Length: 377
Image 1 (spheres, rainbow, N blue to C red):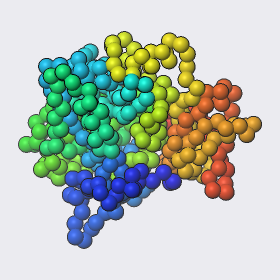
Image 2: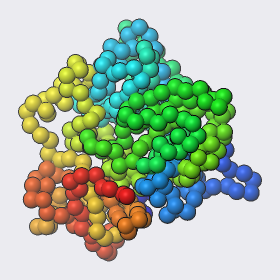
Image 3: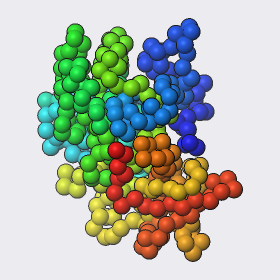
Image 4: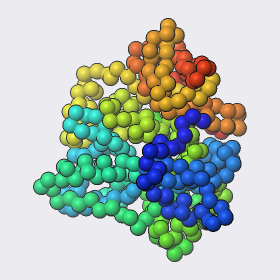
């Protein structure tokens, strides 16, 4: 697999290990760590095939210590936050969330995050590698507003992913969130937990696997980890999580989505709300929607051939430049090994529906746009 989760290796000397990485290490058993999403986290926790199988067909528990949680407080919090992100805030139901892009005035993407509402409270889930940049961006636009951004550093997050994740939750006595983008607060076995059901899917379709985020006080992380493992969840490291992200077609900011991109170029329409009112960059988003399409799109691909490096050029059948691979990964699945990728494709190159070619080292391969998310069962 060429797209290592070490997407920020230059930061490895300065970034910190997650609470789970520290918890799982012992003097006699130290897991290899990799830099991932702005933190150091275990690369592998089980055999690679077992980790992939858990994500695709079972239930996997994994580190989400790269998530940062921020409370948005103050009298103007709803109005101000609505003006800063691309999706709905004011119309969120209690205990609901929405994935958002953050834009500048020119409509270019500055990052992504999830907004959650609990009663009259608002929270943000932000990746660690975007945290400083987005917090500075937001602070710049708190001018005369009664708004305060409060980092919540007491809690850390675990992920529970896979089609059998609900069964694991049921075994340990935790609620299953059937509806995507909902959350619940529970007191459980002496722990104060917050469960969030993420919609992690690249298109407006059914997610390939259930994704649950569980926030727990750091002091009780060990207890929760042991309960989920006892309930049948397989421990999974960052390498398998990253490969599965690509296979599901979930773009990562800084890899598949970058600062020069416009929202409609990413094909992530689920992050856009076209009738919520004004927000930063909204004029550009609306202009694109009303006047025509963009000239390139982020697409999910399935590959036949070697795993290419990020940046590999895609060529049309006629040999013309058609786009670039942004990330690629190979998965060993029950039906055989499959290779997936995300790529930014020129609009004119999609018209024929023909596959593209690419080069990885001295070998060549074929890339086809997936019409629908793949099935892993």
